[in-house]
Picture 1 (cartoon, one colour):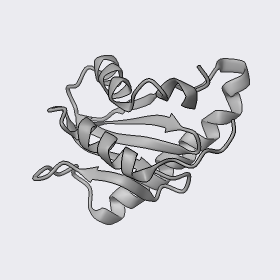
Picture 2 (picture 1 turned 60 degrees about the horizontal axis):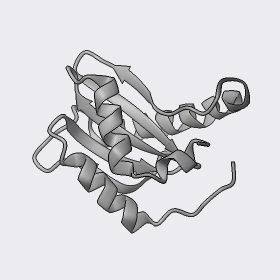
Picture 3 (picture 1 turned 30 degrees about the vertical axis):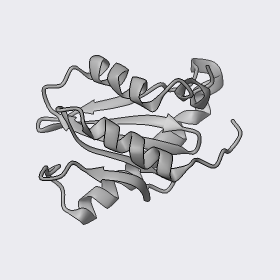
Length: 131
């Protein structure tokens, strides 16, 4: 997949639009190393992690997203991934060499939330995953 340079200001707005969803606590665009490029916490909401822990989780998530790409030819591109934990759901949406990371309420319907997020990412999202 070709590397594309994303308009960070566009993704800042997309993350803010995603944060408008009542079930989302955090929405951030991460680079391939897990560095936050846009977005962040919903005002007044916590995600149960310290900043150091969030940085560690972000790095691990970005690494996992990158590693999954090696199976794209055989299995197809990853549309999104989700991990349901006791207190939160963490989701990832690959975008070229970057990833949108979400932290949502633990009782969220993952597939419905994914559909809402993909709608907010816009029509061009399909390009990022090879559609």
